[in-house]
Image 1: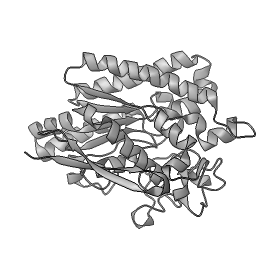
Image 2: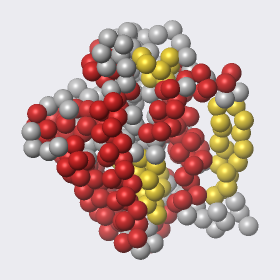
Image 3: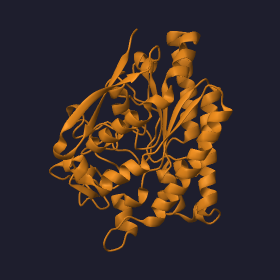
Image 4: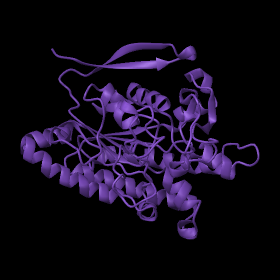
Length: 350
């Protein structure tokens, strides 16, 4: 009997790492990983777009392989990469729009995420990036290419057994709802959360109709604790912004309930709600426990507001920081996050 092992590391004080193996169930496999969403997981799809929401320039990527900026919104790898690495599939998850994408990459998974996108179509429109519907269109194009490479039966097998990850929602609340009057004038927090959840639900059902069965949907993190939001809305002390975190939690609770309901209605599906709110908040509140020193500022510039093009210089030691810029985590923090997601939720996909 053949087993696939997944190495997982827990990080403790003094950065001591203890490793053990997690076993994928016998006669089960994860042939590929497919990712949709926003800048948390984008690996370069925005590079060719006419948008300010792209980071294919230094100092982004300074700790990536060769120190090359690839369009990843961090100093190095992002969760998409760590998921395929930990699953033993490949080292990196390439962007589907990467001009150097190889045919064999399609077989083991690609990334459709677009930085600054959201569940709300208006969010992506304002940022001039790829909406979830646009990502779905690209995925359908991918399916045609995959069929040409491996045939219909193998294509269907890959879709049914691969791990699909959806990560978005933060931009909807911080940018579209609370930073413009375009939605706030028509929706209260509850009804806007319903709009977002309905979008998520529709997207998941579209994937299911295309043959997808294993879908993990990540919650919105504690966006009120982002360095940028602390600076803009957290007062002189730069505290976490309660109303932003409460809105995130409100959406998360509705999303979890909807996924549970969908799971009963879609035969043979494995829909998994992945709570990253509490894990991320725990790291922010207790940075030393996880080997960090600073959790209220990013490594870029002053760490209080810089992101993208205004991130022109960096701190001396990004491994001390939870945040890379005022919106996104460091490679070290993303690695921890990806580890914990797999430790806590991998078995739920079988």
